[in-house]
Image (cartoon, rainbow, N blue to C red; front, side, top):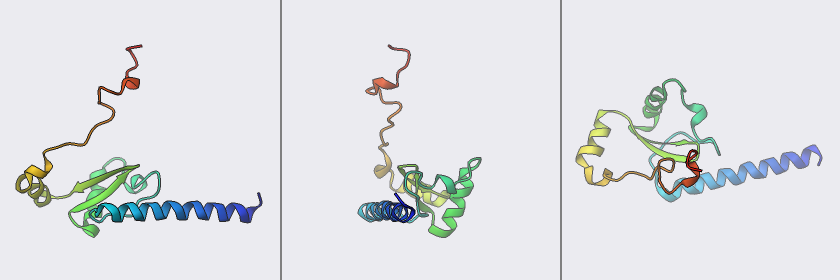
Length: 116
């Protein structure tokens, strides 16, 4: 392939990934948040030593409830005492469940190394 074909193909792939991310964001009606890159999400934007500082910086722009993507995993982050109190005290019934944790699920036999 020549250079122009490669550039056109790469442009189409980027455009398709962008369309998928925009479509998914509208479908779930999520809180606002920084734009996430395909595959890695917002990981390059986070401070590796103190991610809470990055969340504080995001909350100045997007408000106390923000959506970030940690890789493919969509996460809603509550920043500040008032947001956490409202979610966990005032709306406690809505926050009683937890999402499944795939690495601690006992049905994932392939994760067990010593049981072969």
